[in-house]
Amino acid sequence: MKAIVLTAYGGPEVLALQDLPMPTPAPGELLIKVSAVALNYANKLIREGVYKTPGVPVVMPGEIEGTVVAIGQDIAGFAPGQKVTGVANAAFAEYALLPAATAMPLPDALPTGKGLLSRACTAELLLQQAPSAASVLITAAGTGVGLYAVQLARLQGKSVIVALAGDERKKQLSLLHGATHAFTYTENWQEALPGIAGEQGIGLVLDATGGDLAASLLPFLGYQGTFLAYGNMSGQPIPVDGTLLAMRSIRVTGASIMTVPPDTQREWIRRLADDALHGRIDAPIEHFPFYQAADAFRHMEARRHQGTIVLEL
Ligand SMILES: NC(=O)c1ccc[n+]([C@@H]2O[C@H](COP(=O)([O-])OP(=O)(O)OC[C@H]3O[C@@H](n4cnc5c(N)ncnc54)[C@H](OP(=O)(O)O)[C@@H]3O)[C@@H](O)[C@H]2O)c1
Image 1: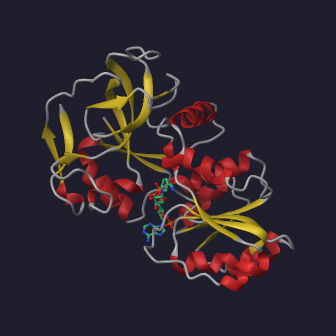
Image 2 (image 1 turned 90 degrees about the horizontal axis):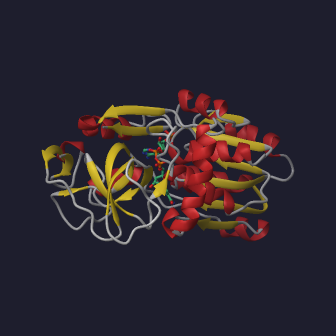
Image 3 (image 1 turned 135 degrees about the vertical axis):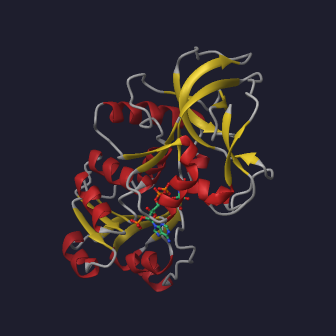
């Protein structure tokens, strides 16, 4: 079978298309014919060696969608031909193994790539951290987790959903998906925010950018507001004013999808896949052929993408 092999840690050029033996499922594992692999930002960090793999050469872990072709011993509840998603240890390949314990069924009718919902699950987790917040501000709101957070906030009936994004296209995309107000980072959102948030201030900020942008959002949080960091794209720490936190009882916290048990994620995927199937949520997909993985990474790293990048087999 063909696989994209990480031959060394580094830039997109370290990825090579190679022939590898077909994997065979051990007890508790499913063999999946992969139809789509998500390009999540975490894959860049794996490729660069920031997130550790057992070494190189290696096929990177990642989020796959595909159909069950073989079933290992001691597995109930899965059948050949069934459509599933999950995180595979060696994902960037024509065939991959998924632990049955973490594999999640998908509706057959869901178009290819739309079942890659780990970022939607992350958005679900983030919004659950401050369920009573009536207003939410989301950075990087035109792609990945951010765009799903906009949509889930809309479905939850939040009255104010402020989106900040890197360019005009991503800003428009967030408006199309339910943001009530949207700005590019360089527009004068700081002047507009007090009028938008009203006396209550913003109830919840979801941020994966970190650094000065994140710090500049804190003064817009209302009493007992929550600042939730779920990533740090800028690589910069957030300078925090302790007095501000104390005076307004602001909570600064974080959350990771890795802490959510498989059964809970399966339940979320079931609901989110149904939302995707019936058009209640949607993420535009940018399809790349599997063998163009390096180009797909370059596209992501130039911040040119919208929604979700999918390698299709
Ligand atoms: N905590 C968790 O459980 C969890 C789960 C999934 C992902 N994450 C993290 O969440 C973050 C986003 O992941 P994703 O999968 O949603 O990624 P994505 O779709 O690639 O979105 C990343 C976006 O971040 C923005 N960004 C801001 N500063 C950036 C910078 N210095 N360089 C590049 N992009 C920058 C860009 O949008 P703009 O141009 O609009 O700013 C970019 O489109 C990553 O840090 C990832 O590790 C965390």
